[in-house]
Amino acid sequence: MTKDVTTLSLLLVLSASFPCFSAEPAELTSARANYQKQIKSLTEPVSTRYAVYLESLKKSLGAKGDLDGAIAVQKEIDSLALPATSAAPAPAATTASAGSDKIVIWNQNNGGKADRGTKKISVSLWVGNREVWNKKFVGIDWDPIKQTKVEIPVPTMTAERLRVQITDTVNGKGGLAEIEFIRGGRNIALKGAVSVSAVWENNAKRGGSMLTDGDNSTLWLLPDNQEGWAEVTLSP
Image (cartoon, helix red, strand yellow):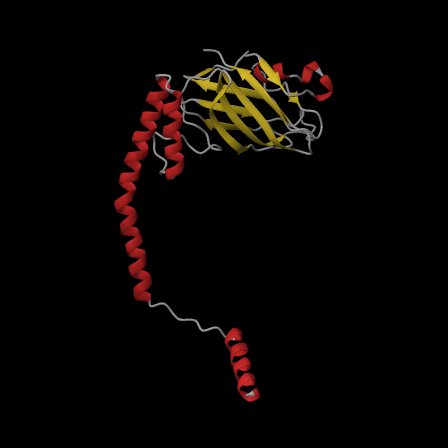
C-alpha cells in the first residue's frame, strides 16, 4: 500500500513538472480563423448600418429637444459597442472633425513653472437641474513646457451649462486655462458666466472667469491637494 502511494505521488509530481501539451492541428487553427473571418465579414456591415442609423436618430431627437430619446439612443449605442462610423463621434481623446460639436479643454502648466496642471477630467451637459450627457474620466495630456488640450466630440442636443470636473492633477495642484464649446464653428462658452468649486488662495487673477475670457494664457487654479469643478453657462 505504501509503495502504491509513493508511486502515485511520484507520477503526480512528474505530471506537474512535465505537462502534456496536445498540439492543435494546423488545419483546425486555419479553419477556425477562416470561420471567424467570415462571421465578421457577414455581421460587420449590419452592425455598421445600425450604428449609422442610431447616430442619425440621436441627432434628430436632440435637435427636436427630445433629450430622453437622445439619451436612450446613446445608451443603446454604448451597450452594443457598435463600430465607429463616419456619423458617430470619435473617441474622446481624438480630434473632432471640423464643424462638429465639441468641447475643447485647454490644460495649463502654471505659465511654464511646470508645477501645476490636470491629468484627467469628467465633463457633463446640463439643462436646469438635470444632467443630459456626460463623458467620465477623460485623459488630458500635460506638458511642462507647451500648452496642451483635449477635444471631446458631443452629440447635437440642447444644453444650458457645461460642467468640467477635475479628477486627477499634477503634483496635487490642478487647474485649467480655457473651456470652449464649439457649435457650428462658434464658441458658445466664450464670455459665459463661470462658477467654480474653489480658487487658489482666493486670487481673483486665478479665478473661474479666466476659463471663458478667450485667452489661453490666463489660468484658473485650484487650491493645493483638492479636486474641483468649473461650470460654464452656454450662450444659445
